Length: 137
Image (tube, rainbow, N blue to C red; front, side, top):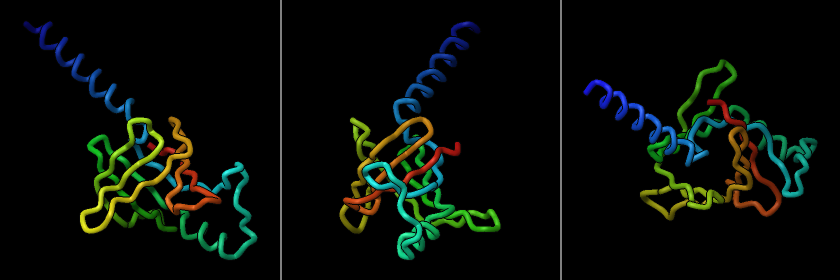
């Protein structure tokens, strides 16, 4: 009986890990930079682009395996400030994420690239550029 319980616990743990691996979005992502669709970084000499970049620094997206999306902003003193939290859904083909809104239409964002360590996502509905995040956890 003892072995059966251990076996069930091991199988349950493996299934939980499988579910997490099936959603590579799960984790904490920190903003790194903006890139153009041709792969070039945005030119920060442009004051508007530089201002936007500076406001994005410290931006953290967290996606949980319970389909909760959370945004925080890391401040210069290393504290994190809560910005927003809402349900999300990753498309089956992993090419987009939908943020579920309760009082307006849902937001649909295109995922340019999603790996174990990099998330490139277009949250500005831009035809020119997207944001690049690095996985922290």
